[in-house]
Structure formats: structure tokens, C-alpha cells
Image (cartoon, rainbow, N blue to C red; front, top):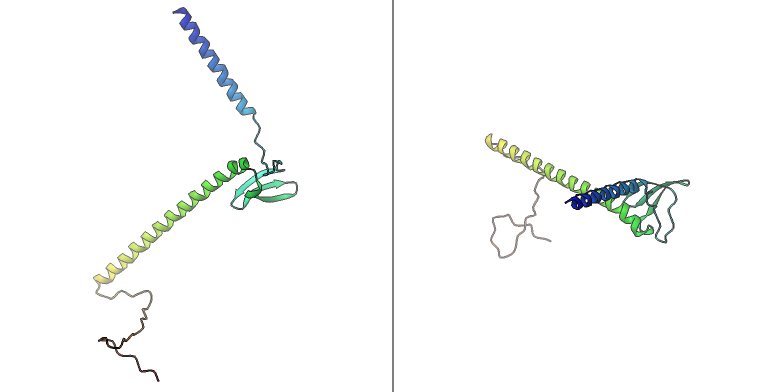
Length: 149
């Protein structure tokens, strides 16, 4: 029994040392460099990820490096979050457009119901101009077109 308790205490001490060591190592790691496709590090600091590429602030000023010129690791680190953010914005805009369309439909239905309750015809938003077509040999209640000269 004594050996079992000693062994468990030793295992607990090793786990604590490993945990402290891992946490300390994570605090000391430097930011991963941005690299071009040929492996050369990009000079400057990250400013923003945009659909056109990576915007970098360097001694030459602010410049955008296209995605195709960046290494796969750099693209994976910066492009994926940017694309996820764009997708979230697209979904949000889609939901807003759908809600607006539903609100417009409800408003149109309420307007039609109000017009029906007062026995007034609903004013159409656009006049309907349909051409009058007469087909020879077909009886129709539409007036015939004048004959071409």
C-alpha cells in the first residue's frame, strides 16, 4: 500500500512538472513568420487579411501580397479565418434579406386585406401591357388586329 501511494504521488509530481513546462514553453514561443511561396520570410507586420491577399505594413508602406504568392502555411493561418468571417457575413446578410422579404410580403398582404375590407381594388404596382394576338382560325373574344397593308 505504501508503494502505491508513493507511486501515485510521484506520477502527480511528474504531471505537474510537465504541465508547468508546457505552459511556460507556450508563452515563450515566438509568432510564426509569414513566408512567401519560395520560403523567403515576408518583411513587415501583419495588418489584415482581405480577399485580395495579405495586407502587410512594412518599411515600404502598406502593401497587399496576393494569396498565390504566399506559402501554404501562411495561407492556412491567415486565409481560413478570413474566409470563415466572410462566410459568416454572407450568411448574416442572406438572413437579413430573407427577413426583409418576409416583412415586405406581410406588409403587402396587410395592404391587400385592408383594400379588400374597404371594397376598393388594390392598385397594382406596375401596369400590365399585354399584346393582343389573333391567330387565324381561332375564335377569340379579343378584337382583331388591323390588317397590314
